[in-house]
Image 1 (cartoon, one colour):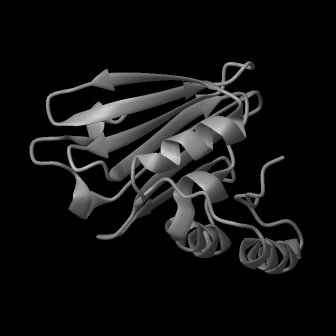
Image 2 (spheres, helix red, strand yellow; image 1 turned 30 degrees about the horizontal axis):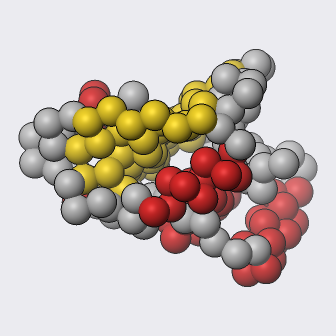
Length: 159
């Protein structure tokens, strides 16, 4: 079960949902990925009950997790072993609290202020870039730390 919040407002319930989510954030142990070290990939693999494969690129490694339902999460680690980006795709969004770790609160705050289309969320700050697209039977997204992208790595490489 995912602990994420909806991307859209429904008759003022967003404030109540945010309050419940923030209370849940304080009560649950963190198994962060974004901004954490590559050791968090193992925790994510256990939580997803997925299979892990690692692809070595020129300046980073891609740790790909796939669960039994085809949900795919990719965690991008620089050569020092720090996760600078995560991407996902599947029938639903993964546990964003777990994947975004310390950056989850920023996602919650941005989602609460989001006033455009209810299936798309895009955040871009110097500290965090995040985009989420949800359709009826699919969800995909990308979150990365712009200041931590290894030299020469482009957003297009984060798929």
